[in-house]
Length: 211
Image (cartoon, rainbow, N blue to C red; front, side, top):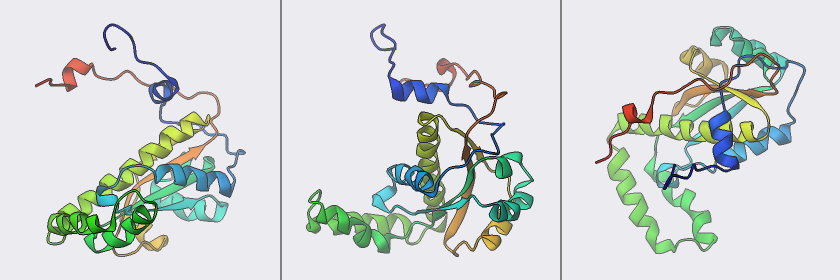
C-alpha cells in the first residue's frame, strides 16, 4: 500500500496468486518451444557481473522422468508435470566475464574499456573463495527458477520447486559438469483440480525492519 492506495497490476496479481502445485494433469504436455521460452524468460533474471552461470536440464520424456523419479524421492510431480527442470548453478568463474560481456559491448550498452572494471573485482571476489563461488551458483540458479515460476503462473501453468533429491545421484545420472551444482528441481505443467490457494504468510511487521 502506498499513500493509502493498494498497489496492484497483472504482475503483482500473478505473484500474489501463485502457490506450489501438488496436482498436475499428467496428460498435458508442453512443446519444446514452450520449454525454451520458459528458459529464455528465466535467463533474463539478474546474475552477478553478468556471469549467467546457469544451465537447465528439461526432463520431459517418460524415459528421462523414470531416471529422475527414484533419485527424487518418487515425488509425483516428477512424472505427472509436463516438465521438470534440473536447475544447475555453475561455480562463479571471473575468467568468463569478458566473454559474457562481449554481446553487451556489441549491443552498444557498455564500452569495451569498462570490461576490466568488471573482471577485476569479480576475480577479487571469487577466485580464492570456493564458498563464494558456490554461493553464487545457488543464488543464480534460484533467481532463474523464480523468474520461471512466475512466468509459468502468468501462462496459467502450475509449478513446484523441490529440494528433495539425491544431489550426487542427479549429478551422476544427468551428466552435470564438475563445476555445476544442482540447485533445485522445478516442475511445471497444467494443473488439475484440488490444489490449494497460496497459504497465508507471516505479517510484514514480523519480517521487516525499517532503519
